Image (tube, rainbow, N blue to C red; front, side):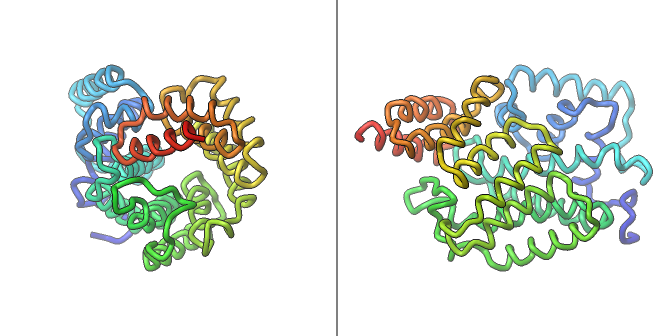
Length: 317
């Protein structure tokens, strides 16, 4: 196989992703289909990944399969000149698979086999398409996040927040690998959403302690990310970063705006983030209500254990 020629991809799983990301399918349908066929995700897992409902996902899967059949979409990588139409979808699917592995809806905090496969395919894609900086950005982002795996859960199986993690457990060689990949991607001077997210992860990785984290820089990077990728989840993360940089009240103002919009009402991390900021300001009764709502929505065992502990703490205060 000639290096750097995407149309000659021989890896069956990567070919499958490109097939499922055919432009004849809409973004949600192609993403749902690939998560099912490549990642083996259940309808419930796909619904969580797409912030959708199980019924809507099931409809998308049926329609996508029918479209592939009726349009006789071939099982192959498209010609090089057509790749830009599919690359965005391919990158999104790989990251969603990684995220499901990183925080599984199925109960365990991680499904490492999904993380490892997403990283393998992202690395292959970055090697085959070195002139696309976002392929390197995605790979770097995954590596930065995966480097923290050993510190994310304590001996009792409870989730450990980033600020409380033992950083000596972070994988230094994986961080170095991620840093090198990110630097190579950024040399082209084109900063897409995956590179910006990798830059945020790099700031965390460089900080020797939670207290020394450069939160103003992270908040600024999230602001830049929000300008190129409009997403309520990005806005939520920006609000948390602003809270860390400027104080919890500043973050709460932004989170309350997201709550008013209603787009993340079923997203447990919105309520847990709001609860944490309310706790930090001493508004424990409101924090308890927000933790309780997050607990209703959480599906991961480690998340639920963490939320139950925090809820008990604010109720006793």
